[in-house]
Image 1 (cartoon, helix red, strand yellow):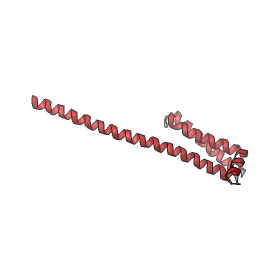
Image 2: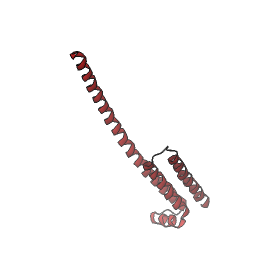
Image 3: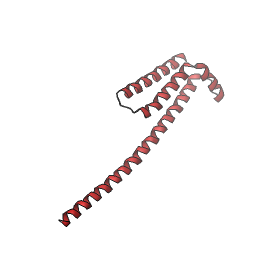
Image 4: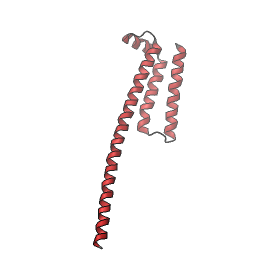
Length: 120
């Protein structure tokens, strides 16, 4: 059991380090890195705080603390992925609206240019 908690701690530390490195190199924006850093920190704290895992496990009927940790980890990452999906959907909608505005501006520009050529 202790080995699994140690591995989980190392994985969460690796996640935190990679997010911070990506943030430093501008590979990830600050507003997106907060979710990943929070998720990594929650998993790290829970993997080191076995008493909380035991209490949470008793509350939901799971007697093996690492199983509780894995269930919580999956839940945390599902929340982060859902948040990223919402952001991605909003960006796609904004991209469509922007493409439509550019198309309207190009149409108006062609109309003005054609009107100028026919008047000359």
